[in-house]
Image 1 (cartoon, rainbow, N blue to C red):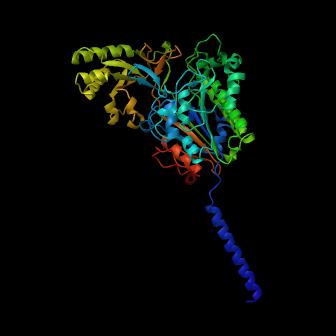
Image 2: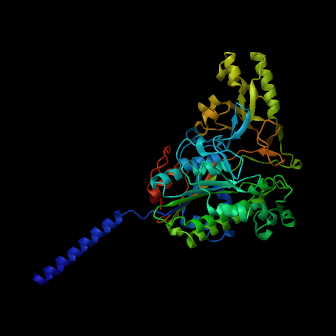
Image 3: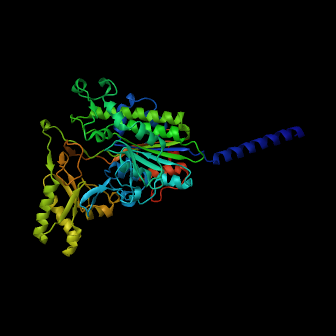
Length: 541
């Protein structure tokens, strides 16, 4: 072989080796982390409704999530949880028994009244008289870990209609969390958080909801013929909902409608524009809460059209949010976005009497009276039952201890009586739940119960029956009868991140796996109570 050929071959070999080394090093290099994290929780989100309406959605909302991201069809919460408790699971990766949040309100045995789970008398309200804080959260959240990992240089903000959900999504280390005051309509927070962003001040002082609401009316977004599967009479009299000034429930009605989603999106876009989120050296996070729960304030029991309209409106809000991130933020290609639903509400409007669907009224006051009579006959006079809240009865622990009785046995005998009452599907003591015996209608797994605030007896009312508000329950803003309904504790979720393609995970996924999955993508620690490993998304692409 000539010297020239040897030099050529040697050079070629060097190029190939260098190329292979370069490719190897390139393959080992981690991808650039997103600079903005957007967390979205949607109350009552249903994949069935999304699939029904996807042909009526635009290209940049739900369809963008489904076509470009990871779709988790069944995010399993274990049992029905309200939005606050479900959000806490999603953001901590831990169950209520660990994270401390099993409902937005708890029963105070001392005052014998319900109170916010996040009640904290050591704080003050900002634009509200409520004294709240996230101290009830026992563990860290995704946002907390972002703040810690960036040494506090990354910012975490939350915007939600309800205070309980805003606090559950924020955690302790967030810069701020804001919600809508249901008395004044102003964006409110707690002095636990130190920041009041400029967009909030501008909204409260220059363009308050109180004034905007005068011009807001909820009517069908599209022609009534567009909404599928509707009976013909709906096209004759489509819905119309307004939020008039002389209505005491004005803000509550608004917050229960999809019109509140527009307020959340508008504020989020103002944050992105004014605060340069995701444009610094450290990544920032913004959390948003939306609602798709059935609207219970309308006169018509059949609210299917309102529900479909809510989905169509939210699709537009998502598209507007994504556009703002592309236009004024770091761009969707530098954004990690996750959107997760919470289980649908387990109650709905009672059917009209003309359909003759079996129904009835379960009176907590009457049940308490019967329980007191029964326990008095067994153990002597006394105020044996202190209250009822959120389908749970609370016994007088002090009296039971004073009489030298076994609390477990008293609970057991009380649940046996309740099981014989009309309208009760099943009643279980807290011991039954701890021991895994509540497996039918109550179906509350041990992991979804916070023992420190748990009731003594959990009751499941027969579907179609209404738990009436007779002074023993939290007052409802609406006066319409609400019937119990069994619902599956699942909801869909979507993850849209750089360098991931479209895929569908159709097997059930424990909701506790979402938080460690998000932090894994960010390459930071999972929340400190996250037990499950992250989903291996790349293996599913």
